[in-house]
Image (cartoon, rainbow, N blue to C red):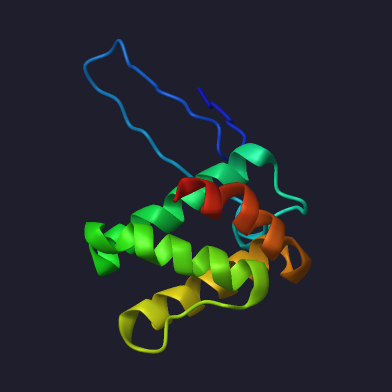
Length: 121
């Protein structure tokens, strides 16, 4: 028997026999995985992205830096007025801004900052 499942569909397979062989092949999914996201991002993906920013800051800079980092990032996205001048904060902020720019586009950075970053502070 063969079971063909489209990419990214959750599935579980259970056998009723004592012996079973399971083989998995992924065909042509590289283009889907490497394709840039469709613009504009749906709201739920933007919200998840904002949550991932918080997790990243927590993991890299520590939980006590999440609030100040988000305040600085919100200022940067609103008017370019962030205060990070060096060190890890600046490196993380530059990484986040670069990734957000790729997801929401340069024109969408301010709106994203107002909707998801500033509201989380």
